[in-house]
Image (cartoon, protein in one colour):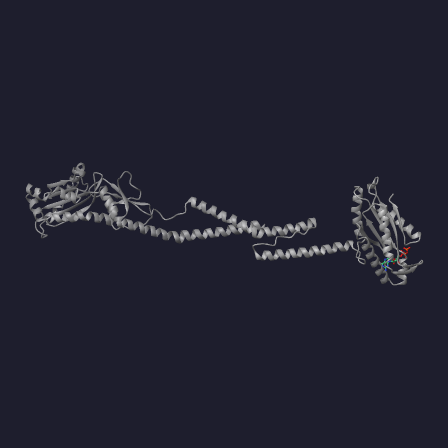
Length: 523
Ligand SMILES: Nc1nc2c(ncn2[C@@H]2O[C@H](COP(=O)(O)OP(=O)(O)OP(=O)(O)O)[C@@H](O)[C@H]2O)c(=O)[nH]1
C-alpha cells in the first residue's frame, strides 16, 4: 500500500469516526434537548392563547352577571314594559360593550326582549334557535334547566359555540334579585361573535397567531374543542396544532389552529447531509494535499535522488527546506551523505587514472585522453603529437643507487615533464616503468620538435647525478610522432598505430646514442 493510499484511508476513517461521533451527540443528546425546548415553547403558546380566550370572554360574563342581579330587570322580566326598555336597555350601550346579541327569557323560556347587532342579523334566527335548544342534538339548551328553576338554583352557562359556521362566545345567567336569593325570574343571554376584531384582540393579548376556519377537512391531528380549553399538555413538536370546535349542541364544526412561532426542532435534511459530506470530502482532499506536500513529496525527492544517482551516476541533492523539522534534519543528513559519497567517488575515480608513485596520469588515463584526441583527429578538428620518453640507463641508476633513489628520480622526472608542459595543451602520463608518454594537441613538426627538445633538456637540467657514457646527469631519450590535422583515411588508424611509430623513433633514439629526440611525421 502506498503512503498516499494509507493516509487517505487514515484520514477518511478519522473523519468518518468524527462524523459518527458528532451525529451521535447530535441525535442522542442535542436533539432531545432542543425537542423538549420546542415542545415547552409550543405549550406556552397554547396556554397563553387559552388564557387570552378566557380573558377576552370574561368581560361579557361579568356584564351578563351585572344585568342578571339587577332588581329592576327582575321586575321587567316578570312584567315587561316598553318604558323600561326605553329607559334602560340601550342598543348603543351593548354596542360599546362589544356585545353582539342579548336575549332575555322568562322562566317559561319565552323570549321577553332581544338585542341583535347588525353584524349578526343574518344569523339571528340560528342563534336564537341554538340558545333555546331548538337545534341542539342533545335535547338541551343554554337556558337554565327547568329543574334548576324549580329548585330556585342560580346558575350560569358560558362557552364558545359554533353556530351557523361562526364561533360565538355565549354566556347565560339566571336573573334573580340582587340580594342573591329569591324567585328566579328568567335568564339573560349575551353573545359575542368571534370576528376578526376579536381574533386580533386575542392575538394581541397572547402574542400567539391562530386561525379559526370553517372545517372542510378535519386535520389528522385535530383534537375536540373541549380539549382546547382543558388543561391539556402538548407532547409532540408540530408547526401547528389544531382542535375541532364541536360542541354538545350543534353538529357544525370549525377548526382552531395555533400557528407556532418555532415550527420544528432543527433536523438534518438531505441537502445539509450532502453539504456536510462535500465539506468532509473537501477537508480530506485539503488534508491529503497538505500531507502530500509535507510528507510524500520529500519521500519522492529522496526516491528520485537515489534513482538518478544509480541511473546516471549523478548525485542530486534533495530540497532541505521543509515545514517539518525532522524531515529537514533527514534531508540535510541525506545531502551531507551525498556530498561525502561524491567526494569518495571522485577520489576513487582519480585513483583509477592516477599513477600511485608519481601522481601523474597513468596508462588508463592516457588511453581515455587518447580516445578524445583520436576522435577529434578523425573529425579533422585537430592534429596532435605523441612523444614516448624513456630514462636512459635507468637499470644502472637503480643498481648504483638503490630502488628508493630510483623511485625519487622517477618522481622528479615526472614533475619536470609536467612543469615543462604547463604552457601547452598536453597530457603527461607514466606509460609504465621508467617510460613516459606525452600527447600534445598540436600537429606541427616545428613546434613539436621544439617542445620535445625542451623536455629533454629540462630533464638533463635536473642534474640528477648519473655518470654513464660520458654524461654526468640522468637523461631521457624521446621518440615522437607528429600527426597532422588533415590526414587521408584518418579514421582507419588507432592510437596504438601512432604509439607503435613513436616507439620506433624512441628505439632509434636509444640506438643512436640516447639523450636525444627523434621525430617523424605519422605515416
Ligand atoms: N626504482 C624503480 N625502478 C623501476 C621502476 N620501474 C621500472 N624500474 C626499473 O627500470 C629499469 C629499466 O631498465 P631497462 O628496461 O633494462 O632499460 P635501461 O636500463 O633504462 O636502459 P635503456 O632503456 O636501454 O637506456 C629496470 O631495472 C626496472 O627495474 C620503478 O617504479 N622504480
